Amino acid sequence: MILLESIVVALVQLWANKLRSALTLLGMLIGVGSVVGIVSISEGLRRSVTDEFGKLGGANLIMVRPQAMVLKDGRWVRAKRYVPMTLKDLHLVEGASDRIASTLPILDRGVEVRYHKASYQGQLSATMPSFIDAFNWKVETGRFLRDRDLRQHQAVCVLGQDVVEETFGDRSPLGREVKLDGVRHTVVGVMTEREVLFNNWGNQILVPVTTAQRRLFGSKRIGGLFIHTREPDDVPAVVPLIEMTLKREHGHDAEYRIDSGKGILDEIDHVILIMKLVTGGVAGISLLVGGIGIMNIMLVSVTERTREIGIRKALGAKPVTLMLQFVVEAIVLSVFGGLLGVAMGVGLGLGISQIIEHFAETPFPSVVLWTSVALALGISVTIGLFFGIYPAARASRLDPVDALSYE
Image 1 (cartoon, rainbow, N blue to C red):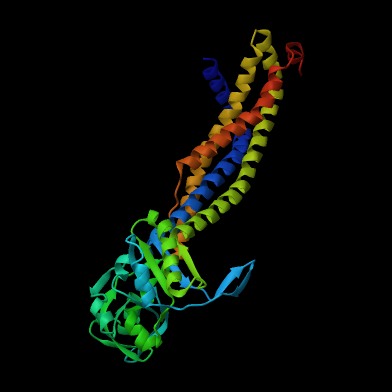
Image 2 (spheres, rainbow, N blue to C red):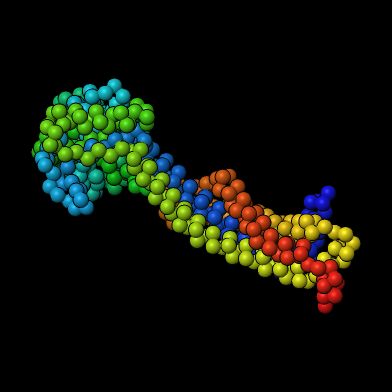
């Protein structure tokens, strides 16, 4: 009953000084709102990047490239031995473990696509049939590359949507010939629209890797490998097997860079965590200012109600009862400020996400974590309690005679 009475008295006192209470709430509102808003945007960024990276394979992805230069002691030096990769390396790595789901070559460059008088500067990717399953990209019309295209070095290609629109307009490109840097290729398929890591894939031209090596690159080399494991947990076991397989083939002095999707995602999480801590620290200053505001209003309240405190003490009120009353007032202030701040933070996060989606023209979620809401409210209540204890203790220690004679 004492607690309930203290809450009622606190609400009455705060309502009696509406403007002063509102100004005090403002500090808590801004602090909590900033924390919730920043965390929701940061988490939205993390999930957006993770989802986009997931289109490339996410935590299942491993990338391998031969190294001509390596970083040692903070500076780049020539590798002991640079060994270019070929399709032979691809097949060796593919058979290194049954945990590997697919292995694809990295071989791309800019290319001019020409059809009659129309031309377009696109991005050529030399690949294999398993590409569409590995990267979960669908064919809209026609077909994708086949194993027979690779074996027979067929001059065929599959186009992205932007290439089709710029070179063919409303006409169907299927069965027609285009020139890729002057080399004729027959269009056999068109891919669906796709955007990955905020990059439009509509400019892609996909050709059989064997055909590209013979007709466009004039070399058997590839730039590296995309490797997808069956499960994300397979990556730590597969990485050393890949390195061991390549070094057994080319010698232990051959240098390779092996990056995993899990490692990249961990780095992204680390960067976003630092951003959360830095921006959250700035927002925490607002919470501190709000706490100081609560202490200020409570000290003023104690001064204004000195005679009331004296009367209550003269009537037998215990110091702990008086202390509880003022502590509850401080907590009520901080809770109200915290709840309003949460609402402001949710609105702030949604507003910023809408602005980003409007100008970047890409989905960007605002993710409100209940853990961040609970943390922000917990901090606001703690601040209210911390900054309310001194004024409350001061009120409980007032001498009733001095309090009654206070003018």
